[in-house]
Length: 318
Ligand SMILES: [Zn+2]
Image (spheres, helix red, strand yellow):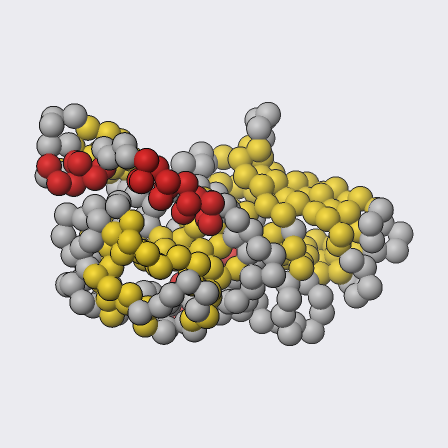
């Protein structure tokens, strides 16, 4: 009996940890239900949803920042935007990225909203960042891969700039996934590198460079089908020096999934892709020490933990 109770408690903990905070903000005539997490790990997106109790209240402008207690600079920030979905009541959300280097400790979520073009709401909510361990690894690069990693050509610099331009763009009307979870981009679960790995690239000339791994590497043979992790729009499908044949999908405002080192792809920029639809075949093009799929998620330019949205959707379907 005791065992069963313990198991039940263990099953419930993740639910409460994910959405444990509910608060009603109110001045004389307006109130909001605000939901968000009490704790987060480095690499998590922090999802805060806001529902006006009076449906006619409109948020004209808003942002949420995350700041460490006692710090002068913000750790992260995101705009509040309206969810364009068939949800019963209007709902707003801010999805704030935490990178893998976020230090554990006490933080606050600072909510600032302008309502109906004039009234300003300010609210502070505590947030605890927990400790998370990341893997350390050394990657030995042969002369070919060393040449790619140290390539200082204008062509490579332009490719990096162009990809960053896409990843740092937030289109508030690009809301393609809403209440769905991610699926993995390959059927195999074999991982050869993890999100947030602290890397040392050992070059063939004896020099080295430290780096961090932004995505998850799945060790799959060349020619393995690669699927879209969620519904979205193709915003890049091209060959790049470092990442080889590359596909980038846009899913939500400022949120993108990236697929690197493909052997081929079957989509083009502008295509709308459903979750689970095949987008190409895995390979080892670009900087790769063997065949694998690199799968990465960016939110407002920040690489976040791709496993997060496998476990829970961005928004509940309430
Ligand atoms: Zn990788």
